[in-house]
Image: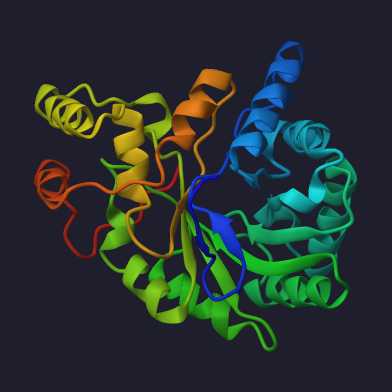
Length: 285
């Protein structure tokens, strides 16, 4: 089975590699293939499944619901509420609608998809705590939050803590490492990398960077994608949720965990894909 680690300070062991579902459900003719890929992922231990009410206007959640039917207890299930729906009552209503589409009575993790909506953050966080108290969700998280936004979100909670920050994080976009990652470590928040393959811009077109990845992959007996996933989950507290709708890609993703990059490989990657300077805005999709 795939490597797991504690998800922040939740006490729950979660696979370091999960399954993202952005664009899943967009094409009804692809649904059977998408369900099959998700189920193969479950068989391989990729039981952290992430979706959102926004994806396919809810159709992604429906596909996930089909994939996990009969296997709900195996899954660390995550979905997100849109900021436009994130008033107190709107959040509760959106959660209930997501639960119906997913065919379950509970979420393991519920995220605010991004900050800066028209509803006060305190309303959203209050609704999240009410959902925890009602047994509808286990943990509260956010997505695309900067350091300052994380601090404010945590201050808005009275009985719970932020379990994670889900962020755009790939080898050519390491802005999360300038400030956010260190804060999350101190506060016991997991950092979950979405779009770890740069939304299709991987492997890199830059010849030097591509050569670096090819050399490291060959030395470790892995693919470039597996090197990328291992790098992004190289430390405690880090998780990645690549999307794959082909079984062969799901299997490849599963091979991104359970081994270690050599110290020389890590040094080479740091040199070829440097962290941006402090103060660089956090990338978002």
